Length: 382
Ligand SMILES: [Mn+2]
Image (cartoon, rainbow, N blue to C red):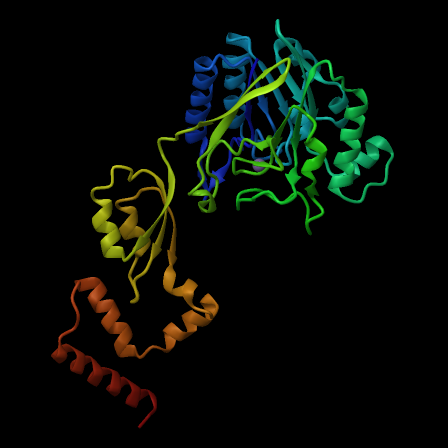
């Protein structure tokens, strides 16, 4: 049986105020192609389908179209849990009706002890699906007194363990933060102060743990305890990550193979660095000018409208940083103060060479010095 593990789609997410829905639709299309190419039997989505609890209608349509393509047209099972970004109640609408149509939405804690059963000629696979929860929700359900996410999650796993059978294969699905795993900038913390971490050990004797929340594809503790990672890069801290979905092949003996299948967006996210003039020179021959770009400028002097100048070549330039500021031990504000204190003549020189593309001549410099001197004398009233 082939099961595809994905998570953290964040449909409807904005990136620097720009919608990413076109890119997300493109990647969902690639996902459907993977399902066909590898003859996938079921898809697990380990939370954060949407980016917000009340997603924009275009994001709801994107998920609806995916369900139509996969569960209705192709008759493959989809099993999805709610993540910390999803609105659990909204996502769980009509779930008992939908599971008859191969869409299993698990958004409520008591559902975590009722496994979704996938069967083929060879094996039964039980999927134990734990929607995102905080300790308070677990305490409310089990009338317990858990203080942190780890104890709360362990209590749910204990309940699952009491019920599961070794005669079938067992997969646990959860949206949680494994202690010691690598985070990215685009995840919203589950709680303040590190009480949100969960130990990987509680997942060790499942056949597979399909996890969501962390956006970098990775495994922790054992190779079968995995994050598929997000659908696409959601911050510039992820430029060096390669995004993928995870395909597992499982039979009655357990997981036989784990394969990461890379997703290739036509617009990548990347960081470019250098002096503005050089970046513009490169940009003129850059076939990937449409990428989402963060530019780090290494120019020493002040530059007029660098964002607009570079955007003429990179329409999706999202962020501009100045290396000078960042290598400086002082705060940007202190640095700006320092810039203001620069001699007036120096500022005028920067401005002139910026506008005309060449430095002031000696004659021009002395003319400017004279004018500045004159103004200073007038201001001091002498
Ligand atoms: Mn997420």
